[in-house]
Image (cartoon, rainbow, N blue to C red; front, top):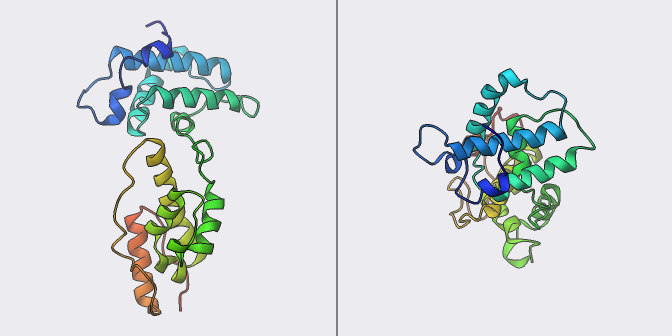
Length: 225
């Protein structure tokens, strides 16, 4: 199939099965043509390590699946990925993986006018104990603090706090950029306020539950007491 204009194709419908939510078993002609166009552009930008012509079909199939699984489903997202790829040219020449391209398709916090993770975390550490009294740099930071919970900020080891906050903030940024609903309840594992010290055994149990809830691997090695 000859490559077609991605700008033309992407105006017709959501791409690659609407982020994996469609029941369609096979990608459509439009899906394949979009990936064809992406490959043509990336071959120019990143000539080193590009798939060989005789293997391109296998690579494109995996790209289609990855785009769907990663929720890349709009023309704005793919165009953002291509624009980011163009900015990367000065630093790299190697062909990106499909997951790398998907990451480029997702605007960063800074792209969306939000604080970067490190700045948001510093703000959270300083004001988590009185969230209603602080004028937050952005409501997404306040929501990430709420989802992380004051108990963890007060009782958890720094590594654990940062991991959970980072996970929450990253997910909130993605949902914000995608225009999704951000109104959800506080995690039930955390009290609304820290009132009394928690026993070390109970603290480790809560941290383990938090890690499982947020999909964070590894054991709890922090010493709490």
